Image (cartoon, rainbow, N blue to C red; front, side, top):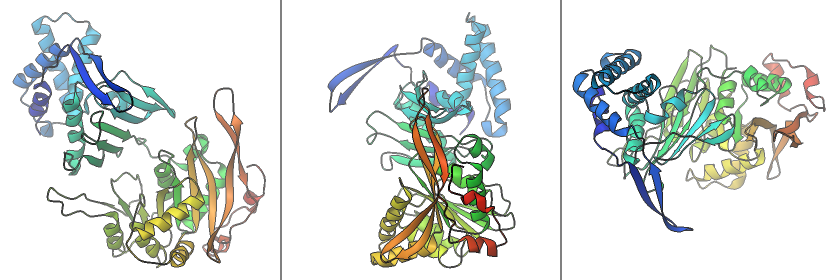
Length: 457
């Protein structure tokens, strides 16, 4: 879409000085919310129209930096000609906002550029929250109306071939930098179009970064690096926002560069740096409800692509069965993530997901598959103070009767909360050397046995 058309879309509606929104809350009854409008909105609308009339430029023919400079210069020229006696900083702000509308993502563009913000949450047009250093904060950012938010959503999803409308009111997408986006719109979202953006670090984190942040410690990092290089099958489990994908990225950095990696995701977000990498992404159905390609289809196809490693961004349903079968048929060293609160819960969820594949398998057979396929579970948690920590590194030892036997190798024990509200605790080695240690030795990988000594590490 041309720059002129995008600017025109922003000028089509002139808002009132005060927006009054009626709403119905099932628990609180009816009421009204008065939302003050930007006093410079009329001026912004006029600037939009004048920029449209004077700037014949398609953004595809110019890089974003040049485009933003041209728009800013044009806005300043128009303000000078029209005699708008505004402070210099106000003129600069107006120019930045118009640039953000044209080649950015509207009012949330500055939030996306702020490196201290890890998540942006738009709850309708008049409420925007961010997560900064693990804490939620309400911002002063707001949109004009629901249509303004919908325009930004469409701007995010259109370049990657996704769509959002009343027939498909939910979508998962990604920004050009790989940040993960989820959007849901009315009639499902009663408070208005809602956007949740999980920002990614511009430079992928390394294991040293996790150690510095207190997510993990040295001996644990040595152990999991050995497990990845030793081609063990690993599941990273944890709750929403616990840092599973970040940890998966770090684990994948240990994969040797001479191996062929195939990644499978709903919305491509993994940041692997290996050269021999094939990235596959699922596809939603088209307008006729056809053409959907699920993760399960991608897993089956990946098996025909001669992978050394298969990495599934997250298992959510029937693809768990195909993933387990891949792990059990020579594709060692596979990695994936899943939602669960404990390593034991992760196994239970895997059983449920295998049943979602539609196969009428006995529970014992499913557990045999899980026990033989998965070698290690890395459990990650997000604590109340916003910190993320690896709370368990647990070996899957096999079956004993009808029960899968788990053994913790490292754990994190919380001891309390300090005066600043920060979680306190220690990482502990349980003293157990994993049964698969002989496999690591066969692969030529040796570890200092003292890392398994049962003490605080």
